[in-house]
Image (tube, rainbow, N blue to C red; front, side, top):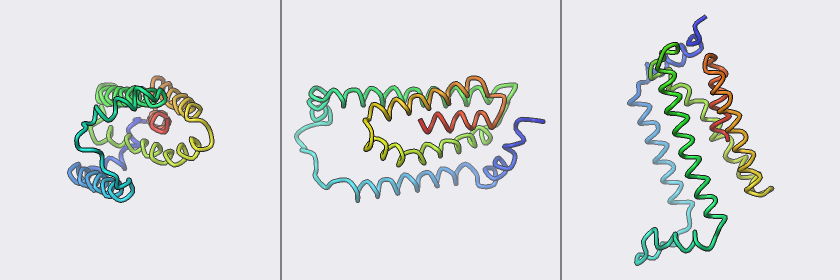
Amino acid sequence: GDPRDILIGGEALADIVGWRRMLLVFAAIALLGAIATLTLLPGQQPRPDRGYRATLAPLLRHHPQLRRAVATGGLWYFAFNLIWVALALTLAQPPHALDATAIGLYSLAGLLGFAALPVTGRLTDRYTPRTVITVCMLTAAAGTALLATGLASPPATALGLALFDAG
């Protein structure tokens, strides 16, 4: 059968809800995140006479672990966007020829990434950050390998995305 058959039910739901309502849902989630940030972060204000760079520069200079974390985060952001853009472009072209709604449904696999966050936090507390980052990178690499070999299969693509995002 057609590999898109799995997506028909989800595509119909997304078509009913519409992309505007989906954006409103994401805006509401962002607003909840902002409210949580205001309530959970310390109330100490940064010194107004120093800019962001002036505050961050000495920290980066004196803390190699922070430099590594910044570099790792930047590379991860680059890889994340590279995977998603390449995936969207590939799935929009023949032989897949999926529409934007069907491609967007693959983003649901990314929910595993959110589910993994508390687990990785606890593991980081228990083990070293380097160990957790290594395991996460290996998980993301496994997801990438699955994406590179399994695009013909929607379940394999969803699993690859889930592993990538969880990593």
